Every structure is written in C-alpha cells, then in structure tokens.
Image 1 (cartoon, helix red, strand yellow):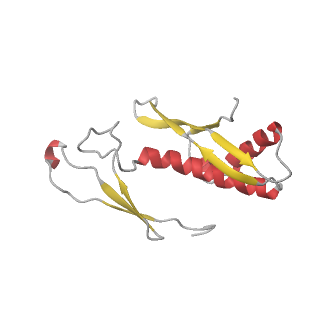
Image 2 (image 1 turned 30 degrees about the vertical axis):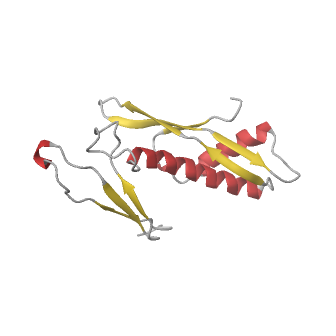
Length: 159
C-alpha cells in the first residue's frame, strides 16, 4: 500500500452464549484483543441495549472512542510541551462524548468535550495563551481527531 506509515490491529471476538438470538435477546459481551496481547472485556452500551444483554462493567465502543480521542490529544499535548521545554508533572482529563441523531436520524457521537487539567513542573510554565495554542496544535496534530468528523472541543480549567 502506497504511503502506509503503520498498521494498527485489533481482533474482536463474540460467541453466542445463550439467550434468544432470533428475538434479539442475546448477550452483547465480547472481547477486544490488541496486537500487544491485551484483552479487554467489551459490550454494547446499556444506553443502546438494555441490561442484561449489555454489561455496564465492560468498555463500550462509545466510551472507547471518547478515550481514544482524549488519549491521542494528551499524548500530542505532552509531545508539544516537551518540544517547547514546558515540563508536565501530571495530566488528567474527564472527557465526555455526546450522542445525538444526525440528519438521517442515526445516532452518532457528535461532540466530544475534553477537560484537561495539567500541572506543570520545573522553572518554566506556559502562559494561558501558550496553553490555548498548545491545545489547539494538539487537536490539529492528533491522529485520531484528524480521522473523525466528530466535533472535538477542549475546555480548559476556568473556561
């Protein structure tokens, strides 16, 4: 494949485990297996498919999507801070994805709000303007945010 920089793989496994498949009453529990060997228990969201056919203790695709956007933004932000010699001591984000219906009535994660809280160490801390600029650059350079049509908004503390 021309221009391929890297591949990223995940294996998804589901097996019928009882219930009445023909009536739509079957478990949505399944596993995600990543190329490094990690296996994650997954399920549909209870917001989409009621318990007991969904397991709220498992990761659902919508949560994983929000986490993926948040994680990519954070990793890009840390990289940009490193390049500008702003030492980050900690980074936390309680990201929230909002599901709405599109113009055809199909639900989708239309907006993801990132709520980063960054604590800096060292002698040099970014100004508020620097933080806004760095978060904007992180959004523009994040591989995941550049791959989706979801509106990703960053709310800094105090906004």
